[in-house]
Length: 331
Image 1 (cartoon, rainbow, N blue to C red):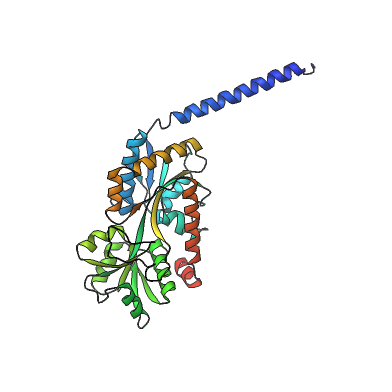
Image 2 (cartoon, helix red, strand yellow):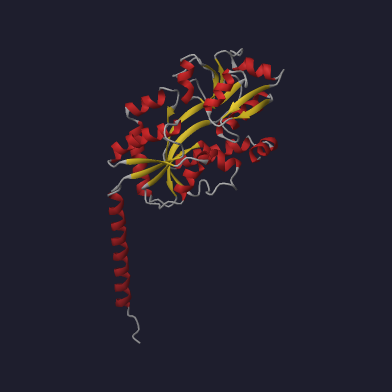
């Protein structure tokens, strides 16, 4: 058996180093060519819903800037958790993305981490935030309540009710935060969708409705609904007459947000490429105006900034979890 000489060892070392450099070069070249095929954007809503509309808007705008078609695939169900699970298990190559939102990456991990089939943030690689929309407290045009202060004051004297689109959803927990901050009790009445909730509210079966404000701004402008207050740090330019809960002295630190994430393990150059082009898409006048017209706000918060936002959002929802609320959600 021949003993390795210094020269042979150096030769093997050099050959290995060259192979490593070549491999890195091929990897970099592959990332430089990204994307070479259409990108799938998984959306956890049926076609036509508010989240679906945002998903299609950003898919079209991102496709223009990145130079490749972005195809929306609707995988509705379980409050967006089905879509999140599909992306968590997808190949991490940058060709399958998720329209993430406060529901499936904020609320679900905070309220029922053991019952969802994915882990946040471990199973995802953030690309960037897209927008935030305020939640709002609505009453019908025929309601006796003209302000949030009046409604909450009355709730201290008599039993009032509020509707939501589902137990344990982001808006439901948002209203629980309002109740906690205002020291009031109100009966929660969950519905399957905003249509039936609004119909019953206008008919007097429930006193109010707490929901993401942006999809209902049109009905407010048409005079069908009255928006008493919204979440957020400051008034929204699209609805300047509507006060924030913060103005009323109530801390309700949650919004409905949307963003893009990829499966964990997606190469960093791909994530940076997508994040950069998402920023370009959000800067275009057509996207900015479409987001702002109904009281949402574009917010490009890339990569690690979005990761921090997700973790902070989970912490906010966890802080609202009283034993009674956890019991209601688990039933």
